[in-house]
Amino acid sequence: WRIELTVKKYGERAGDMKYGQRFRYNNLTQTYAKYKDIFRKRMKRKEEATVQRHFGAAAKAIEAQRLAEAQARAATAVSERPAFRITCSEPERETEKVEQLFQAFVDAKKLAGEDIARLTHAGFNEFVRKKTKDLQKQKGCTEVEYIVETVDHQVKLKALVKA
Image (cartoon, rainbow, N blue to C red; front, side, top):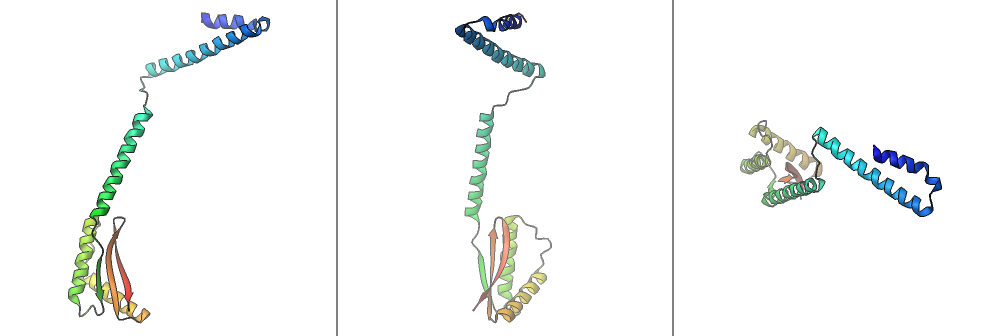
């Protein structure tokens, strides 16, 4: 409080000061105000028992975590199996091919961590039979190629028309 009174006293006489004196006075008052604010903030932190966060350390930790996630994704992308392909013209007669397709589809879903509880062999056979007949009728083709692939940890079953 003594410093503040002295600052006020000299502040009232600022008009009587020369240019150099006023410059030094303003410099001192600004420095005092800056350190007073710093001291006030430190006391507030001490009284409230808050810890100062080091954003540099947090940023480094976040960056390390992102790097680890990127490496994990790259490792899983490398370990993913290539797409399973099979060509089918008459699913009723080619039960062995449909069985292989079903097994590849189930295996891919298990690897991707997807739910296979509702997936039945009979339902899959019916789907392949209908899809093959529909594509043959629409596109006028004889063979349909089925592809089982994993895209972004999601299993896709694609049906492509073969000539």
